[in-house]
Amino acid sequence: MPKPIYVLSGPNLNLLGTREPHIYGTTTLDEVKALCEARAAAAGFTVVFRQSNHEGELIDWIQEARTQGSAIVLNPAGYGHTSIALLDALQAAELPVVECHLSNPAARETFRRHSYVSQVAKGVVMGLGAASYELAVEAATRLAAKA
Image 1 (cartoon, helix red, strand yellow):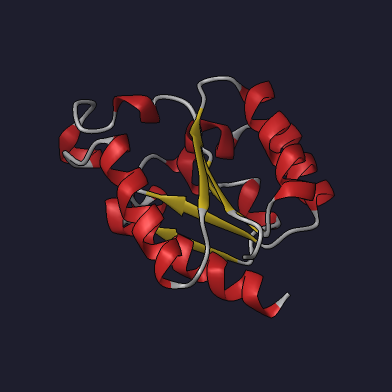
Image 2 (spheres, rainbow, N blue to C red; image 1 turned 30 degrees about the vertical axis):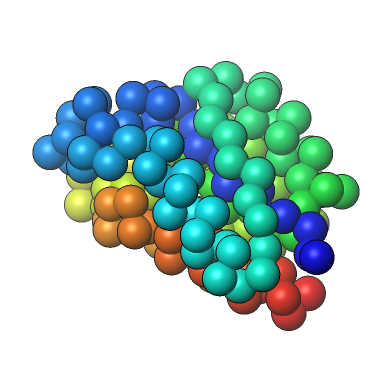
């Protein structure tokens, strides 16, 4: 079996389903996890699914994925707009990266339109709610299968 796809979520995503549902939807993070697991399984992969409100912990998991994973799906949340450290970790991981967002940052506040993660991502899926994660996992499995 191939190495798993790491699906990592940044700050405040633990509040999915209750936090600003008009922006992020009503799907919970546990439900997103189930969607990701099903999409990965259909392609013969498993997922390591984690969420943290702490930048350093996300970096530790990206570094873990470097040797233990086959690709990374990352919803960096607010860190996407601010974290050069996440960018550096993703570059060092040398794995395919797919960035995902539940909302469409390009249609929101100006400060959300820049993403450091996008500089290393093979692709970005955004604005499709929970389906953004599903499609990002599908893309990651395809990228990993080619590697």
